[in-house]
Image (cartoon, rainbow, N blue to C red; front, side):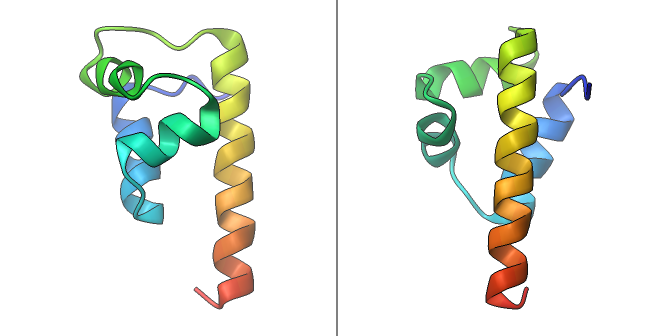
Length: 68
């Protein structure tokens, strides 16, 4: 399972041009939790790592359909 270090979470958002708020809504967590994850102040649980991987795949498929 991918570990999802802070830089990877930031890169996920940048790659798909989504805000911390949008990512938090996709994951079902508070926006400030994304902020803490990206700063390395919190570590994602195994469940959240799994959700992040699922969201990443969903965003990749969505981008492919749009031709990006």
